[in-house]
Image (cartoon, rainbow, N blue to C red; front, side):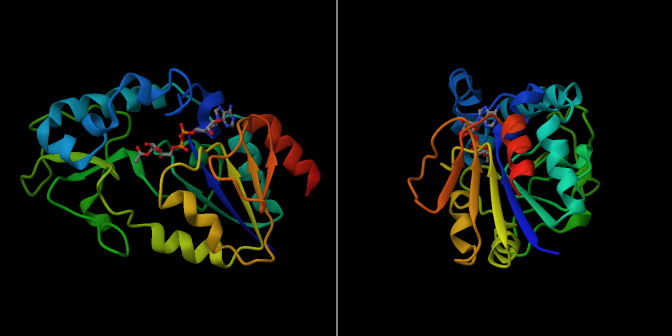
Length: 232
Ligand code: OAD
């Protein structure tokens, strides 16, 4: 079975009603990422950061996977699929994808604030599932330490990058869906694909990276995924 590596970004969840970051009226128009999504922001004002992710968890509870998530999951019948997502939502899993690697963390998980990234990922025993519930100042892990979102903040390393590079470097085909390719190191992942592997991008906007290697399907995720499934 051919190996298909799929890199997704906020655009794949846009049709589920979750806002992207850098489109007009996107999340970063309304919040300063350095205040709510950076490691310095966390230590400056933990409450502000916790509140931001509490709101996002609530939005996720009310969102459902769209047809693009479902078509991505259905590709497992034809390919050995690895989904590598920059998204912190769980819509790929809820649509049925069984192999999902989260590069930027997971909204429904928390961990003590004194745990840090290791090269090969977080120690799973220090990560707790909070579902769609709220987390507040004073909420502590069993070791007595304040809980923080299990999110890769700006200014922190991306622990799952090593695994992601390994996956992409063995791929027969790469599909990128709904990302501005403006945040590194995730944006550089497709460069690790073998020269023989075609690289497709589904996004209504031109990619931030001008690269002749990228075959651009200029559509929203649901239409683009229908097109991609027909094409392959
Ligand atoms: P961006 O907001 O930077 O880019 C979203 C992309 O989705 C854009 O290229 C849009 O054109 C596209 N898009 C919008 N609607 C779409 C639709 N219906 N179908 C398909 N594509 C659509 O989001 P990301 O590239 O995911 O990190 O951002 C990367 C990282 O930056 C995020 O993981 C987050 C953010 O800061 C952290 O918070 C650590």
